[in-house]
Image (cartoon, rainbow, N blue to C red; front, side, top):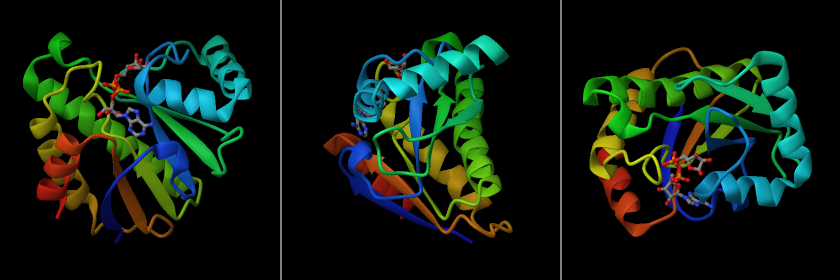
Length: 173
Ligand code: AR6
């Protein structure tokens, strides 16, 4: 059982075992939270991502991979590729968004992390409606909450903007 917390802030400043990045399939950094994480972590993160893509290819939507934190004081960063909302039917976007959170939780558990902080994946450039994303994510987190999590105890939803904060507080409480 993990507890779910919703806070407002910059995910690069949150003290937690790991943070999740809203990455793209090329893992080459970009704007939004991805850009903020790459800037804070330093070039070592871009190098690790490039090496991953050279070895494994692009990271598909809904999937996750793991790197070190670079200059960010976390044990690791889990990179998740959220769905571009307009590229899928709504139900498929829901499923892919939930897969990001689910796969990141399972990876964090396997790495024995006690806490994990998520941004509001896909709700920026990727255009997922913020109210719908909050409902889908919180519904998944509540469904999985009572599974046998040995290590993951805290799930922190880090909202950057007021609109997301209100939606995630409402849906996750
Ligand atoms: N901390 C927490 N959340 C943040 C921060 C931050 N420092 N900065 C922005 N957000 P987006 P996406 C919020 O666009 O929609 C990138 O270019 C922001 O307010 O970062 O999954 C990637 O390379 C929004 O609610 O991610 C991809 O190409 C949320 O993070 C693409 O954008 C997600 O917005 C991914 O798009």
